[in-house]
Structures are given as structure tokens and as C-alpha cells.
Image 1 (cartoon, rainbow, N blue to C red):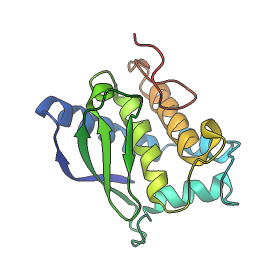
Image 2: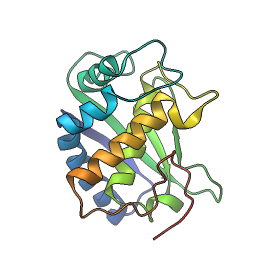
Image 3: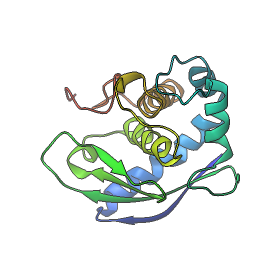
Length: 172
């Protein structure tokens, strides 16, 4: 599994390096049985009738934005700054994901990886969170991806990630 970063904008060199490092380590997480098991066994809501096993397959195939199954998650990341609780967003049909620099500076590798996986699930054209955010596919995939990252790289503490989503509640 590969995460290919095509472009980054409005980010400092340090922020770009932090993102590259997190996503490189995230590739190993996506290849792990630990991560796959967490997703397969998750109790998703608003899952469009996909099982956890199918969601693992969708992610690992690299299929998003109507592209071919190439086992690559394609992403471009742009930073923005807003003094609110929006961590990031994406648009359907785009490889671009936006991340609020207000949070990025506080995030560690697991937080960044979890956020990218959250937005990637939105870009699959399949998954939204309309009613139950914390157990929707995007939120739970992001949460479980960050947890697997931390378990596989225990030296990465959860600095700003809250287990029920990407809203920041406290900082270490």
C-alpha cells in the first residue's frame, strides 16, 4: 500500500516534512493486520451497507475519485487557517484535502494519518456522516487508523486527537 503525495501548498517546510513522515509510516499501518482487524471489526453507522471487510478492500485498492485500483492513495494537501473547530475538509472528485494549520502544528504523526484517512473516506464518494459522527465510516476509519498507528509506533503520543473524532478537546 502506498500513499502518494502529489502536491502540498500553504504549508511550511516543517509542516510538509511532518506530513510526509506521518504518511510514510501510515503506509506500514495500512499493510498491517492490526489495522485491518480494527476496521473489519468496527461497528459502523451510515456505512452504505458495506461491511468492515469491504471497507478494508476499498481503502487498500486505492480506488477513489473513480480511478483505477492501483493500491495507491493519491493525495494533495493544502493548509489553511481558521480560528474555529474545522480541522479539515475535502471535495468529492478531487485529490485535494485541506487541513487547518491551527491543528496541524499541534498534531503528531498518528493525528495527521487519522485525518488523511478520514478525508480519504469522504473522497471515496461513498461515505458521509449525517447523523452519528463518531461511528460514521470517515470518523471511525480515521479514529481506528490513528489508534493502530499509535500501537505500531508507541513513541507517538496522542497529542491532540480525541478518540471520538477530530475535534480537539485537550492538548498535551
